[in-house]
Image (cartoon, rainbow over all chains, first blue to last red):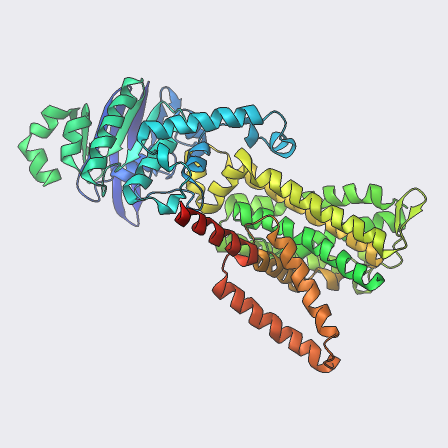
Length: 247
Length: 298
């Protein structure tokens, strides 16, 4: 399974954010998207996940053309994502935030109104949410309100929510930026174990150390174009990449 | 005693209306300024069915709920395309439109003259004449409204609504069809408002456009906000408080010419105080305090 973008173009008030961008992400790998600020990394991810209407070009998940699809339709194809700024249901507990991601019959209007046969499913989903929280190390904070978490824990929670969807693709926007070195280490370990389970990860990141440690493939973007793409060691060994795009 | 029951009836009807608003606004973030118009649709439906086709409340109420739900479809369409302030402005436009229909569709609504002598027939030959019986109906309706709100705001359905309320992109990223949820919650909210309108028409035996204006919508929104728009029982408390306080002023011994403006002044000051000091409303803020104290003790 692949996620593919063909000739993507996007302008913002005359500024070209994506210029004929072509990129392909392969499954069961960890792919990092790097590049300077304004390179079009988040624009690319927004376009692939349906959060941004593109001017021209096409997006595919496997062989399905997702260009005209809504974000929720793309998500149901097995693509979960996080955002650059953490987005949570702030007034709710950690476990409630994770449970929101687990599909449930209770989301159907008639089931919700009658509450018929939902107890067992609720218990099952609650247990599953606890397992996901255990996996990311937030099990002890299950009943904590999301606003009371540290920034790093909020990022982990957003990631846990992605995991709970059981999507095959996880697209993460700067998962380790702004979090403590301890949590960065923890996140790197988690990302590795997720891929071992057969899932694929695409992440945008500025932290080159983290990229080196975890990514199998690196895609370098600049001014809306893919400049280099390839195995992490090869791409990051290039002096021109390190100097021009990473600094 | 009849007077006391009258207050219970009015409070019960407005409580249901405030719950209907809190369901869409408090749970899904869809603040509508048209609850009074939808309430009016329910009231006129019941009045017309009872007066013209001799259908009692037992038949008129479900019809009123269905028609009011259908009348909420334009709100659902607006909600699928607009967000925040733009949605609120669209609902304001819809409120003005429906109020204008009540006023100007004279052949059906009799315009400003209104529809009078609506029979208080509940079922077959069962007529309600005492306020105590009607108070029971109003209380049952408000409890049922809270029950429906509880079912839809808790559990998986409620979690999706809360995602939509806090940030639609969360729900979208999780693969939730937010248009369906918005559609369903606005239809249910409309149906509850329609039921309240149905009871109102049967109780007052008279409906005219003045009861369904934007002013009424603002009063309903105030009830929900004062009580706690994100809570289940807050809107009931808000409705009870805002119906009861003016009535209490009547017995304060203050002359009517002073009491009426004083009521407005107290209402305004109380509203500002609550918004500044209890932004989550009476019940919402109390719940928040209890939660934070609970966390501190842990």
